[in-house]
Length: 356
Image 1: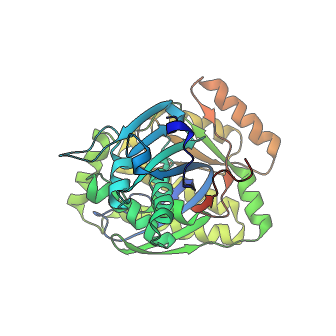
Image 2: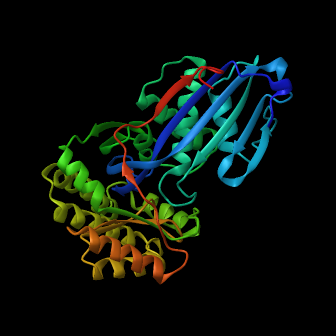
């Protein structure tokens, strides 16, 4: 992906967006739930997108992409009768209507592992839409960026996708979301004192199970069942009950109450289908319990692979001992260091050639 004759880009646009953990109320942000309540937390490591912009006449391909985590470099050409191997990126570029007289070189990177059930693909979509929005000067709000990224997945790619992941990436921080008529919602950022923020950040642990989560036959079965039961069924009502408890507990700095809401949500997930809480998740939960953890939440929709959020107790050395024991249990289990995101999507422009 070298530039033609050392050609400098006209513009360099950056976009970063956080991933999502602890999505209490997940499954209620979907088309079959119709209405929902969700609590979630945006955290770093974030997804980074950098877009170099050139004159089209100066480049052999209209769009070149470097997926840095995978060491993959590939070109995206005009779509003809279907998407290629990287449909999310192709669809985002088509949706944002990049001017035909421009060529792009897009680099995507994240320290977060793919398939961790932490909304990484949603963060890629949000960061891409945000960067391309700055390029096309549409001036979308955070809400509009999230809706655009979500509609790319549901309308253009025909994927099953709720609304909360994109909203968390766009807004960042701690959020309480009320979906009053899919996909329309309000987002209420939860503002707390620094001491509560820092303590929550210190207590939270993200454990990756070492293998990618993918949508499965289990998820399709759950969706079919929930669609048949209707949006007011008890299984969805149980999930809708945990976000308010989470919100109120975090506002009060009540970590015991917050941990209890996390556990209630994971138990409600398991009632949707036993396999949504995997054997790996159950083993990590056992270790967390032994170390006095206050709560745990299987991230995302659940199932095989993915990750678990743990809310540890008061003492940091006990938290570190818990992490060591979890990682010793299985060579695939890995602690992913996280920090709460003060902001969501950020985009800015660098001036090529200035300051090296």
